[in-house]
Image (cartoon, rainbow, N blue to C red; front, side, top):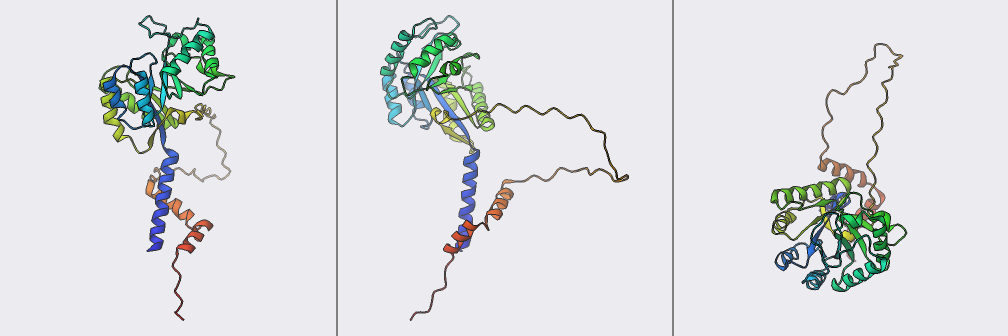
Length: 311
């Protein structure tokens, strides 16, 4: 009986260890916090790994940042940066032509308005993040703070990583926007895309906004997150390494067959091998581990000893 319990416990350990190793990490950040308390409080009812990015000049900035921090949630400063398109801008939006001193003043003010922040990401910013000089000024200022920078990737040729060279600022990048459109079906599709990327690459970062439809989709889909996907804070991805996709080998030219044994046909597999299921895999692992020295020692200590006769 004891042996059976031991074998079951070992198998469960192997199952959980295998799941943990292969789990894809998904970070979700909800931007534009500080303007919509109703929807934002619904976001704050979601799992604590869902992080928030707070606009410094929003009327509820400090309140929402403090609430999130008290929950143990990660808080970012959603720093306004100039876009290429003409549209209404937040006050103190960073521009490429600003001096480093002016950028330093704006960031210092944002830090005071968004308590408990551990990182920053850009609000809009296609013009600013594509400017190497402008982003170098930003990174030089951030070098004096314990912040990481999450690039929202509002433009493909963002210079954030290049600009951070020579500083202590770590840069991570957004993979998926959840709500480029307000359509629930589109948001759901983007959420599934983020899951697929996390599976394929090991991790993914998705950014959304506190819109009613986005909140509704997250409320529906987060409880049913697949077992091989784990929610993480963005800071847990700072040391992730992203290897480029391997370059496929060129197909070799067909060689002229050389067979010194005439009449011996080439072996051809006519049927596909049967699939290997998870239970068979774990049975094989268990069988290979079953007789290793450390298993034998543990089993030896757990096996009941005969009780000597009383004297």
